[in-house]
Length: 473
Image (cartoon, rainbow, N blue to C red; front, side, top):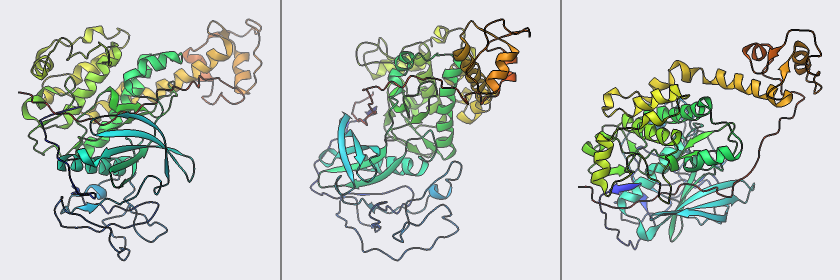
């Protein structure tokens, strides 16, 4: 991610930070139950934890808040489709970030995953239950006022919207003498930069339905963000991950909200995002809108489908290849011919979606909600279930085996014994055909053990937040 503006970092003597949230949030330590006092002092002033105030009574404006055992209110807990109350914008007031070390927060560092100019991501283990989490650590020496605002915004979005299954979740924010920390969920499936290689290594068949399942989950995440007037502004392969290494049933999660923009009406004077994924109109107006995220998603899927995901060696993205500076990337994004013809001809639905998403005119691009209503996307669950049923039969009988009516009866009964081919006088039907899928319950796994590849990868890297400065024009 590149910020198109040079910002002079200054060393700040203060060791505690305040931030101005766009929506009022009472930060509370879920473990220690420490309430945090609002303050109206400026960003540079020191603030301290307050004496615990009386517990506020629930109101009709905060129906989703829950009480902790300590008697104070936890941060708002959100469910899918019920976040309006938490995102109401009222007068903003700085909030103090609790002061605790990692050990005091009950976390033990296991390993460093990676680092950027602004932060380091670490794998930690909770000492209370041995659960793995990830922590994004920011050095106070390099923090600026703007980066502090982005940090708070990132935590606010992830803590409030992270209940959605396709959005990364943040649990806590705190600071010690030298660093600020965001505690987040830990995902082990790797990001989309190596999605194809990892999936193929587990013998996963990269069909259009498989890609479609991933595409739909990306749409679900963006639709949920856009429904609440939030733009991600940096959708790219490193910011899309799988929750687990189960590539046969991928679960997608959108991460890194470090430069997310709240409200499409916001005005920005610099461009935030990654060249090669920034929508054509954003290069001109600098401000993102939901259709800008959709263009970025179109770039991601084009590069995935034609195997052109950028790497750290020599491979560049479709709009970055053969460019030397940001000016040329901008020109390529706005004028270069898009190689949709290289998408496999078997992926007709996905090619149509990518072509729509990469329309240079944002008014011609569909929204995430629009694409989720597409009949093929809408039917993906049924298609996946049918394919899964057929695959189970194929594993049991062999790809070239003929399925007889007697076989079907044995499968329904949960028996592992299968009659020899041709032993039944009944008319056979081909394995995986519509008739076989129709006759066999989707629950035929009872009594069968279908082995799956459970290989783990040492590359459990999380994308780290990085911020650099460069003049665009």
